[in-house]
Image (tube, rainbow, N blue to C red):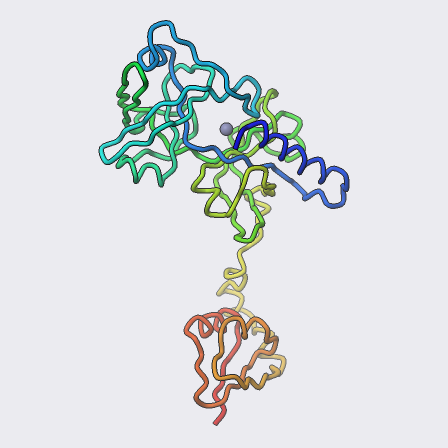
Length: 293
Ligand SMILES: [Zn+2]
């Protein structure tokens, strides 16, 4: 999708949200998906595209001064190669290639998970342009997810540069990202950057809105809501109050059925099949399944 269109969609979504402040998700962070890309150092532009060559701008990126170039290169690993990998400008001090884990497996390379710019000791890769090729001994990484934000947003969220937060995205496949690094710069626009694998895992498209959570504010996952110590030190309410029972009549008891039953004891007819997952879920929920004699 072209960057202008993405910007437009993000703008429209945010605009819609802005119209009705009561619907603005608390701690909303727009998410942008970064496809595989290359940052080049000036000498490498010349090796790949010819002496004196300079990158040309195709479209602006959301962060000020950054752009997607018209130029692309092929990247090659020991197993295979990927064509038409977009170059992002302007040129940088050191060439850096950012791929997804899926790309890495296809290429047959093992890049580390790194913050952009931290390439010391990262993986090697070969870049092939129309006029030549470059092999770099380091510079291939899988980018650590991060959030760009200005100083005002940082204040509003109560976070600092370099801090790690969690971002939750509610979609048809809800997902939460942990260890998301905050990057504060007065020139940055509020936006979270994830790679295509992360986006695909959560069915996330450009402009999906995430929710920023500071780790100390995170709610305990449901499965951990019953610490062992509580059940040891105090009688559980289920034992002091006579549990109500539910008469189950179907042939198969699944987790979906369990979810719909509020009683603590479920009485099933002899011969009813209880799925293994339902047994586990019942245990987690503190429910007992009794077979009627
Ligand atoms: Zn970024």
